[in-house]
Image (tube, rainbow, N blue to C red):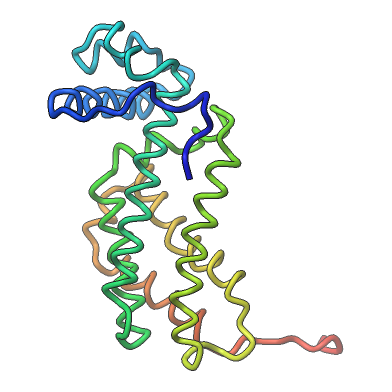
Length: 216
C-alpha cells in the first residue's frame, strides 16, 4: 500500500542520475539511523553523507519523517518481492522443501540488507506509520496463507492458518532480527536457517498437544 500523503516523496526519479541521487539519500538515511538512531538523524546529516546539497534533498523529501518512511517503503517492497518470489519458486514442491526455500530466502534477504534492517527497527512508531506497516504485514500474511492452503493435506488437523502464519513469521523474524542487531555471523551458519525450517515444519505438521482440564 502507498504511504500516507505527508510521508510520501515529493517526486519519483525517472532519469538514471536522479535515481542514483535518491538511492544515495536513502542509503545515507539508513546509515545514519543505524548508527545514531532516529532521534540523532537530521536532514543535514543525510545530505552531507549522501554528497548532495540540502536543497537537492528537499526536492525529493519534505521532511525527516519522509526520509525514514522511504527507507521503510524500500524495505517493505524488498521483503514482499523476496517472499513472493520464494513462494512462487516453492509452489508444487513437497512441504519440507518449500519451507526450506522460504527460510533460506528470508535469511538471504536479511543478509543482503543488514544496514537497512538494523536501521528501521522501531522507526514505524517514530513517524506514526504503525497502521501502514500493519497493512503491509497483512498483505504478506494473506500471500502466505494462500500458499499454505495448497498444502492443507500435509498440515496438522485443525490448524488455524491465520494464527499459524503469525507464529511461523515470528519464528524466523526473531532469529534474523537478533542476528542483524547482535550477531551477524549467524548468517554464515547454514545450521541456523536449517533449524528455522525444521521448527517451522514441525509446527505446521506435528499434532498439537492438548492438556485436558483434569490433568494435574
